[in-house]
Length: 456
Ligand SMILES: Nc1ncnc2c1ncn2[C@@H]1O[C@H](COP(=O)(O)OP(=O)(O)OP(=O)(O)O)[C@@H](O)[C@H]1O
Ligand SMILES: [Mg+2]
Image 1 (cartoon, helix red, strand yellow):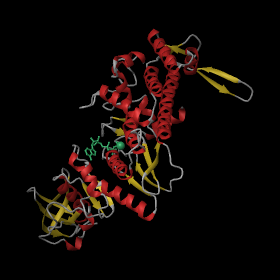
Image 2 (spheres, rainbow, N blue to C red):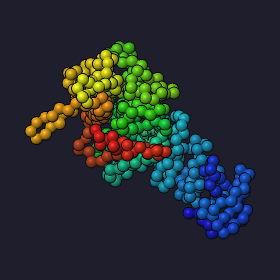
Image 3 (tube, protein in one colour):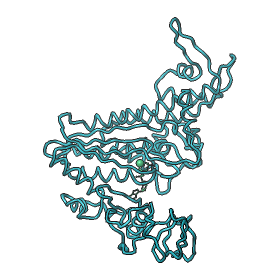
Image 4 (cartoon, rainbow, N blue to C red):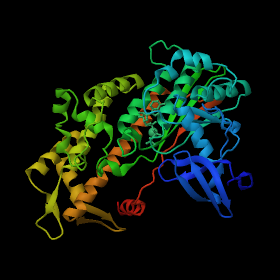
């Protein structure tokens, strides 16, 4: 709401601007419902009184670190405060005990070093510049001093920096509650290394974010009586299944598919892989590479992270076999079979992909083909096998790919959790929720998605 009563001729105000959102200026005339403003850009505009907000001319030029200190807590005032701070790389601002982060879209290493963590250790909240470390420290202190479990909620639109902020919070808690482990793989190290593993399988490039989390995550860090990390559990929600077989340009499928196609030659050979452009689940979009990212290095880094979180090399092989199988599955095309309304793999190429999938899944090739081209209905008295036409077979192929991939993801989370280990005796924990980032679409296809879902 604008503070209309305080706006008179000569007042400094904010008015809406189609280009820069809000622009400031001086009031020239007040005429009932309308106000004439001489903007700092030089133009004079007439604005509705309800869209004009007073500007605090005494606000410090560098902004304020806590927005409760602002004279006017309205949209233009808040945005201007962020802008002033952003100009000097002050990307964090408080609103009371809430921290607001503005994505810098560039690395600011000086903000997150060990020396910075040391500075925030035990500092009174609000004494130092706003920072995720201060939030984590406050949660940790409250847990230790008052014996109350804490939760930190990280929210914002897609690409805002939730996952990066979550990592900072986890890093600080690991620093405060960590202890050296005999085998070099402490609980906190495993928790931190679970990030790249989960990101490889649950993150993808979208229009808004090259590393968008396509799942929600709640990390629960458990502490013993002395405030040391004694266990952890990761819970994930709602992996975006449709992305496995449907990608729109210029987005990508999950990172792991591209990494695996760029694995060392012996792995590419083992999983019968090829250039990502050869796979239907990847070539629906023209985007295959990400700026500044070497997929072959990412593959090796993911393998190393899997070692740290305690996934054995046999299990790693099984995981990548499933990932490769999903890609080959997508290349099985169907055509009309001999019987009416029936279908079969289209050609030798489709048959060859079917065979590779059966080998990778270690299942019988004919049974796999039947599971795609036929549907078994169980009635009270008997089992009825119904043939599917080529279109329905392709839908059941995609359904299998989505189910296998999302089960792989759930299994991966379970395996990581078993390896990290939970402390069932722990009374105190700090939970961090990195929620699914929201997106607004010009055309919302939610209904279509629900329809697809219902038809599987
Ligand atoms: N504090 C930061 N310092 C440097 N870069 C950052 C920071 N926060 C975010 N970024 C950059 O912005 C990108 C997007 O951030 P992030 O993945 O955390 O967004 P998100 O809110 O989790 O989005 P989504 O909901 O799509 O998962 C990061 O990959 C990184 O390049
Ligand atoms: Mg994220």
